[in-house]
Image: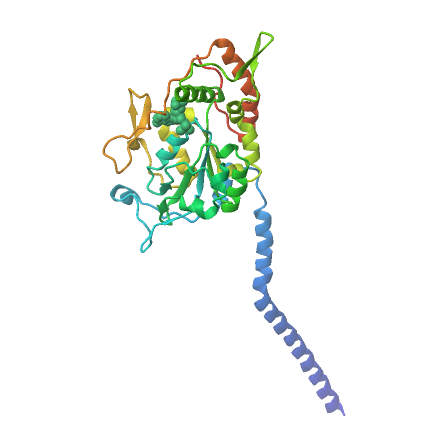
Length: 351
Ligand code: A3P
């Protein structure tokens, strides 16, 4: 009887130990198999918290834009050979990854042609006007792509049309084509730009110069606010529209006057914004004293190449009253523009 009782206690103890062992094994297997998920879930949670949108920082935002990486170049590579196409690849036409959207008369041609010297860039040489001209837009996306230069996959296709910035369709459709599209926008002191338009207008029409942006009411001179070239210089209105479709980090705005004075610094900033290998430098520019502008020295060329005679015209000289009227008119737009952009340009009257 005694021995039977001892036996049953022993078997109960064994059963209890087995139970404990079973439980430990279960927990072990549970952690082994599910632990990865549990911890990676925690990591994800941590990661999500970690990736909470930081306060706006242009550089950080640029780094988060996804683009296929360009192959790194080492200094030796740069000296010996500027560009290597990917092996076994044929050139083909591609949608642009970067648009120069305007503004006309601010230096859009200079910017495109300077960029065209970069071996990793393929530029559409003529203005395509796909987004801003109905007859072209109706031709469709295949037509648009067919206007692009043939390029390799490690090159960046760039197109410029100087009125893209003002047409409401451009940002909307450009985003549909590529939400990571980089935008380059050259602006200029809007009064200087207006004088550039005047110079173009009167050299084209051969008319005697007048001031179509002014009106005289009861002997008082005022600005004719609905004059189209003035609206083009109200940059803040256009920037507000673009910001509905693209973050500011994807839009690089540069001053056309700085591009004229110091093309090396400006183009190197553009190179960096586009994440292109830093190849362009002083060796690519030559100051032409008689023209009063820099000309280009592409890597492949032996002599400098200047922009055509339609670039760099002599501007009409404004009298002091009209100058003040124009600067007073543009100042509030400029101030709002600088605020939105987070960057100022020196757009006050110069003697
Ligand atoms: P002006 O002709 O009024 O001086 P866009 O190509 O957008 O129409 O801009 C034309 C402007 O580009 C010219 O305006 C000129 O100031 C500017 N520009 C910038 N770099 C230039 C360069 N290297 N040669 C000639 N013009 C240049």
